Image (cartoon, rainbow, N blue to C red; front, side, top):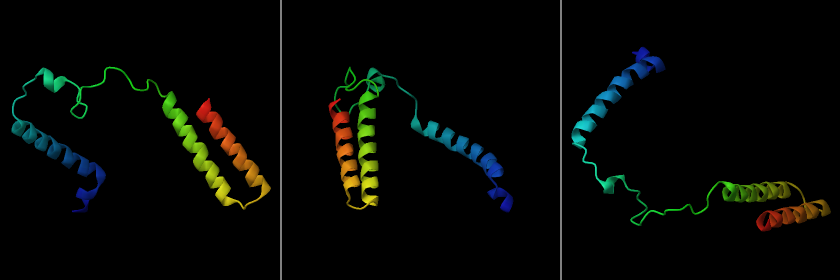
Length: 103
């Protein structure tokens, strides 16, 4: 009985089982009737946009870098005490975030 629990045997048992379930599902679904409505884009009941809101990955990377600097900076600040060095580090962190936002 333990041989059925080994991954290779389980894989060989599940592949035919999945194929049988898929064939049953295709039979229950009925024939396909293509139409222009089915092949059109769906956007929550609204007409699909024809242009990208923000083309490329640059806006994403700016936001990701902002949060990475913010979270890692706060993590470093929280691990130290309240000293002059952490104050200077906080000032540098604020300048880096401002440069990232404005530039």
